[in-house]
Structure formats: structure tokens, C-alpha cells
Length: 377
Length: 118
Ligand code: FES
Image 1 (cartoon, each protein chain N blue to C red):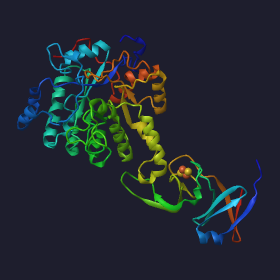
Image 2 (image 1 turned 135 degrees about the horizontal axis):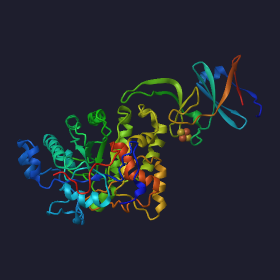
Image 3 (image 1 turned 120 degrees about the horizontal axis):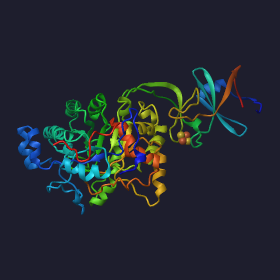
Image 4 (image 1 turned 135 degrees about the vertical axis):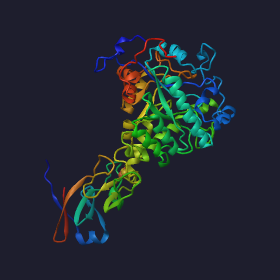
């Protein structure tokens, strides 16, 4: 994009990023690519069984955009150079926060030792293959949330890489994320000032609970429609369990879970809190205030109401313009094109969404020092 | 400003016997409570949705605490609305989880009688 009005100057006079994409899926092109980073003892399990968290729905669109197959016929999202050309350069995206592909659900493999080993291997592969390829790529430390003490160790191990900007785990789970069994993960993330992100798509798979409390939706469409209910459940849990009282600096990023449900959840939580405060005596303010301070959301798949003003009305109700970050979900089928996806949103907020909010969260205040196509081999 | 009138509303002995009294002054119902040796008078109308709040439970509560700690306190100093359970501080009228307050009146005890000004 060449909208020069969006190019802000930072204090030092360096140019600020124009677009930061908070959800880009980098794929492992071939299972073999992980082997140099995986202990030999797990090679066969990985090669023959893959991440092994089963299930999933049939959608008539493949999960990936069919136009995103790489120049050499590789899997969409598997080539740092191609991704830069095909996505970042085309849309003027300065930074891509990488969220992995086909591996996030490793927390849902029944074998926690395998899950831990694969998560570690993925993280090392991510550093070598992507983060070293271009300063435009920023990484998310993948953890196995089914084994929180080990997940915390993995955060300790990887946090020293300055290009790792957050922790990520799948939103499919056996338990709600506020519960104290998960607190070691948050403690480690907080120690290193890293946000913790969740990504959907594994609801009902592997050892996760069913996608709804009344079981499994019948078809992909139905399952995909209702994913945000799991996000509501996790956000509700994080607030009520006092995670943000215990870790006052922690930020939790709810990727790809929609956002129009947020006003409802805030209002309902506040209303109930007024009568049931004594059941959560550690909360010192209204639940919605914790949400505004500690939760971030990403845009894709942005709700598309018929009336343009309705989306802005939702943002008014949330009343927190710092909470939302642009994401495309490249190269998945439900990709949002930055040139049109946010047109309905009022301009000052749109500018915050494209870059400012992610700059503040991830500390990405200046544009990367690269030209187009400049990927280090 | 309209001038206030002093109303003789109850005997202290009866208030102590019953634990609380709801009295009528003009059109208004007023709840009387003795808290920590002082008489408090609150309008019997919850600021949330107009329940007869003074008929709610008088109790204590869990005080603000650290995560997963439970500290009981304020015994007999909290009034809990019988409808949606909002807790009010019987000394100040303040809702413990928000901005709203009970409407209160000045109460005095003289020679065994309770007077309120309104
Ligand atoms: S009317 Fe008193 S709490 Fe609702």
C-alpha cells in the first residue's frame, strides 16, 4: 500500500511500521525439515504419526489458499522468500508475526513427552528457517499447554531470542486457561515480558474437550461459526481466576476469534460481578476493566455486517481502541486482504489497528531495515 | 433546600430485639439497623432495580484478598439485596462492587427512642 498518510515518524525520526500482520502461518514444508531439531528417539513417531492430534472437519475449501503454493510447488507458507514476495511485499506489510501451521495442536497429542519434544523442535526450526531469514519475521514460542511446567521451561529456553515476540498455544484444551494449573506458563511469560497468544482451529481435536458443551457440531461451517464461544470461555476464565491480578503486566492475545461478542461478555460479566463479587474476592475492579487492559484481539476473520456503521458501533461498545490488531491469516482460505478488510472501520482506529497497537504490544517501533525481496539465504 | 423534620420512628429496645426494623415515614419505607453500636437508617429501595433491599440478609463477606485467598470479615456489617445479591456496606451504604449507594438518613438515639431526620 502506498498510503503515505499512514507513515508516522517515531521519536528518533525513523519511520514507523505501516502494517503489522499479527497472524501469518509459516508451514513446515516437509516433515524431514524438523528432524535436525528433534531427538532421534522421536523421529519415527514424528515421521509416521505427525503431530498426531486427529479429528477435524471437512471443508470444501482446503484450509490453504490454492494460489499460495510456492514457486517450487511447495506447501503454502513453507518458503520465507516466497511468502515475503507473495504477501508482505505485495501489501506493504512491514512485520509478520508467525503463528505456525499444522503444529499448533501439539498440546493435544495424548503423549506429553512427544508434545514437548515437537514443540521444542519447531521453535528451533522457526529460529533457523524463518527468524534468521528476514527481520520482518517475528516468532511465537510454541508451547505444549498440556504440560505447563515443561511449557514454562520452553519459554525460559526460547525467550532469549529477541525475535520471539510472544508465546503461542492452541485454544483447544481440556481445561479453561484461567485455571491455576496453567499459571506456570503465565509466570514464565510475564518474567520475560512476553504476551501469551492463543489460536483457534483445534477445538474438539486430540485430547481437547468437544467444541461445544453440547458436543460436536455436524459440519465445518457449523464448527467454524461457533469457535468464538471457546474464546469467550477462556477470556472469562482468565479474568475470573484472577490471572491478571496475579500477573499484572500480562497480555493475552486472542487471535482469530472474532470480536463482536466482546461487548456482550463484558456486560454480562460486569452484571454478574455486581452480585457475586464475594465469590471472586481477588478481583478489585469490574471484569470488563481487566479485559480492556489485558486482552488483545486480531481482526481476521473480521465480522462483515451489512451496515457499515454497525462494526464501528461494536468498537464504541468495547471502548478500547488499543485492543485490536490487524491480521490476515495468510495463507488460509479465510484470508483478509488488508486493502479492503478494514474499510468499514473509522479512520483513526483503522490506523491503530494496522500498526500502532501491534507496535506497542510487540515493541516494533521502527520499520525493518530491508528492501523488497531482501531475504537472507 | 427543604428543611428536614425529625421523626420518632422506633424504640431502641425493639430494634435490638428484632435485629432490624422497617418503618414507614410518610410514603417512604426506612430500614433501621444497629451496626457497631450506631443506628443506621436506609431507604428500603435498592438503587439497582428497586428491590426492598432492607429485607435482605445481614451478613459478613469475603474481603478483597490475594488470588485464591479467602478472608472473611465485616460480620453483620453487610446488607445483601434479596433480589440480585448486591452487597451494601451498612455503615456507608456503598455497594461493594460498584459506584452506587443506598440512600441514607441521619439517625439519632435519645432516651431509648430512635429519631431520623428527613
Ligand atoms: S434490586 Fe437490589 S441487587 Fe438488584
